[in-house]
Image (cartoon, rainbow, N blue to C red; front, side, top):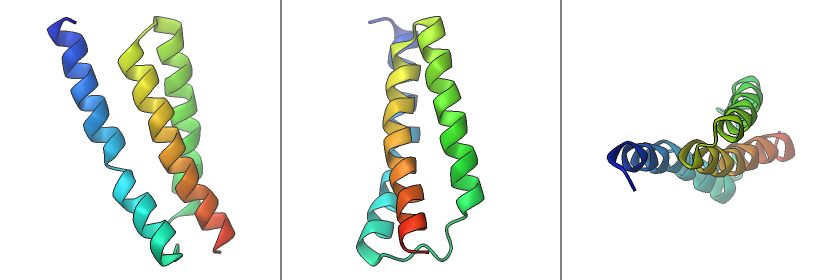
Length: 84
């Protein structure tokens, strides 16, 4: 693995992992009062587009980061809709 790919993977782990605390907190508290549904709709859409871009350019770090990010952000969005 070259240093550019390693850098991309580290960045992917950090940015993707940043959604995990919110997902856990939302799931545990069942409170989504302060979560913006519009923000998460836009974010999920953007992540889907980044994933498509990753496939088009053949970038494993971009694909992996965005697939996992989508799982976390979609979970938060689903909880927002469920607990609204």
